[in-house]
Image 1 (cartoon, rainbow, N blue to C red):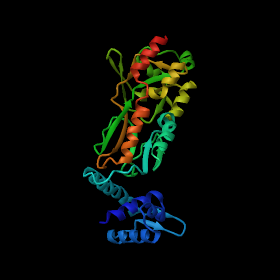
Image 2 (cartoon, rainbow, N blue to C red):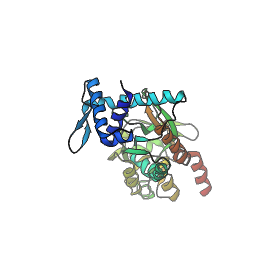
Image 3 (spheres, one colour):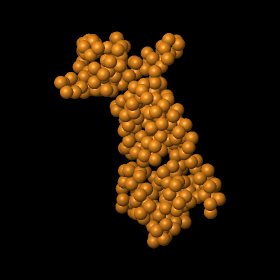
Length: 311
């Protein structure tokens, strides 16, 4: 299979413009159209739907695209290993991340990345709903979980310590909690799931918390909205320290059961499909996020020391 034609298809799919993709590869529009038509005849499938006004991916094209990207990445990596070419840092990078984290930490540094890499276009999907990397043809995603999917590889961006929070006004009205069992008597702002949560305190003592036993009258699938509702006095919620450390320091939120945190082995991971070669554009974006975001996030131990000194 002609990999130049496969490369042309990938660029055409990213740009949704065959002529523009051809020009980037040094092909006249007529030559680019002819190369794609030949590739489609070779594969026996229509990869792109063409009209006088626009180009779009066909169903077969959407299925073929991740494999086409892999073929190009493999070719570039093989040539680079032989010292025959220097991998170019260009193209469109599809990246998925939780909206709450992205708004606070990723969006503010994107201008710096785009300035450093003017030939990369970022296609962001920001939502607290988790996307399927392979089906969505994503190059990279940020997830705040423990990696359990055997089809994924990843780099750890930062720890993800989760704690219980409420507003001072809520606690003044409903009472402070002394033990984990007291959670069953309070209002809970529930996020995503109702699975039993393990808690661990500073001495290593463990406890269990069943969200189904609490008064969960507010269910929320957006982390930022959950934090705002907690600050407004709607109840007790579970939050990542990276999300609430500033509000805790200012007193807008108060730690509930301050000696406890969730007993989970979660972290912020930059993940990508295991089958993918780590292309130059993905590698530089990972390195950038590690330097600009991961290195600047407050660590839980540092926050505890700062808070102790402040008190």
